[in-house]
Length: 346
Image (cartoon, rainbow, N blue to C red; front, side, top):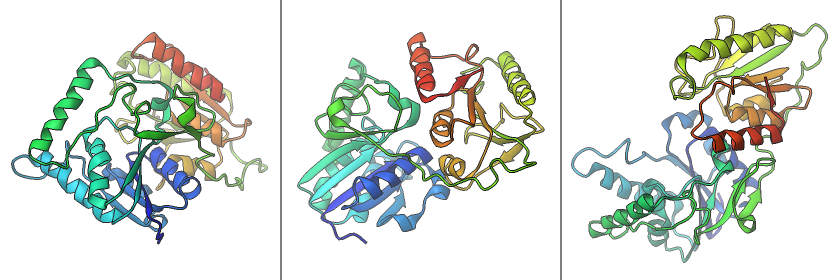
């Protein structure tokens, strides 16, 4: 266990954020004591507690308030006590999160240094896939909402919300001194704060790649499309048929399907596909498993597959002529990112 007077805390909510936190802890903040906090229950299967000086699940106040009156408020205070116990006494805190405008994370900016005796605190932003390629400016209404969150000080002085302006994740804020980004992905963050991470996974040679007689294999990446309002129900069959036709044309008969945690209906699935459920992060699974093609629609997993696999592996996005976007600007920005990373469009 590290005896450093500097403690790095990582608040993570996805396998990608966890992989980034692991890489940062090992290569960028290696001199600090490392504390991991995850707040999505399903993430537990991905986490290796042996890699951290301390780690714990933290209930999200909105979804898991404490029972009784003011349960959300009391959960916020309990979470601060929980993380302070993991951190202990220190002189410097480095708080890592993908976003800092949510009250469940923001209150730590002031409450945790006070609870741990830290004289110095810095916020550092974790990469969060496609969300990280664009800026999301705080509206006037959301900035006003920030100040309303300060009212909790009337009942709990430690809950002093840190207001800020600019990008909602906190990239423009004075308390943020570093923004971690994924290699090869574009972004709109201040150059002086950006730190590009190395690859999030260590590539392992595929033992069966190119073996005589080996069947060609593909992985279809599922995601909630109709369920998330990204695709009309009548268009789903067309996209699925397009994928099937492409696979048949390329002589691929061995097909795995990886469902998204919110893809309960397996929308892009097919009876011929083999459903897989890797125990760890999908990115780590890809690094250890050979495929001849990786297929999907607009999942960020396609970007990471392109980063992981050699160019001989085809990574292809389907159905973009049918997919809905919030705006034409979002469509153009996302397509530009996919093309820059080398993802093909069918």
